Image 1 (cartoon, rainbow, N blue to C red):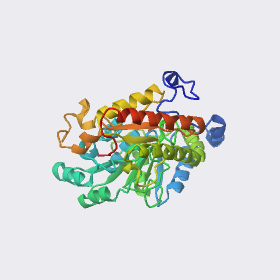
Image 2: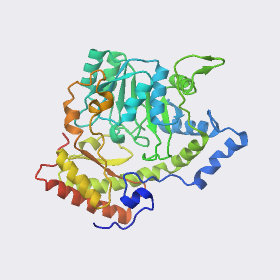
Image 3: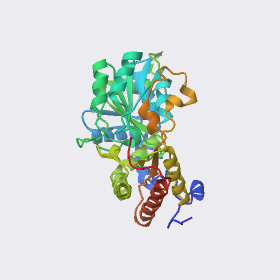
Image 4: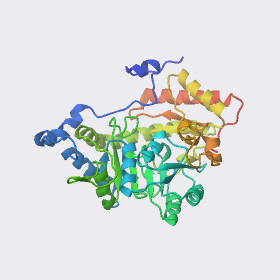
Length: 392
């Protein structure tokens, strides 16, 4: 094994020096001052001063007249949005996504109708969304910004609008990114939902935020706090609230976010140059400016991907194989409506992407090591005698 120049002291890093997630979370001295008002007022939950400050700051960052509701996780946030919309029934959703997306809609009393993805964007195919709406009477569309991409969502938005159903966007890994028109991510659909999980660029530990209209934000806050109104409970609801301590960390993370995103993008550019040199098609990265949670590389076959991942592991780098298999093939949803729909692009692509990790402190010697390891892994994948290089 070629030894990397540095490593981490975590238990996971003892197995692999470069795990998929190596969070850079603000240290206590960076966020303790954000709790001063919380301690002064003894207010630590249910929309305390740190949460209110965070929501106002993120709303200003996103702009476009959006309000922001902090939430316990992106999963809880998606559930709260669907509950606030009072939709219940089939929801069009990509099969090419993380299970949390579907868990969230089920917790809101909805059922998934799995749809295919576009081969270039790796996100919902608007034509197949229309088919699903027509066939199953979908009451909403739940789009996913795969890997935190920041594509133009106009085709999917148009499909939802023509059908007269709301578009909700799972933008879990996309906070800090911008769309092709240069605007901050968070303005699409009736709501976009972000994750502040430790694996994301905006790393807090757990948490999230919902960017939506002021009108829907009021209802989201209501259902996120059990829909209690005086002595009554007015609708189906949940507990999706973010505590003050997490909000304080998030405020400090916001202070550091631009530097984190810049480091990740610089690292990604160096690794992209390596991939392009091996004829890897990175068309899925072409639109917008994602914050670069990771670098997804689509290999030509499942065998090539397996060889690629194994080669990186030899060099101590953990690559992950999201999202395989497509969720329409998962045991949990084999009986879901439309689970047997023909999803040819998902079937083809699910076994081929490998996500190379990126960190908010990946630079210098470590970045040089990553570039060399990526070269070796791509050489190994090419050595499987399979053609590498197309995204679909």
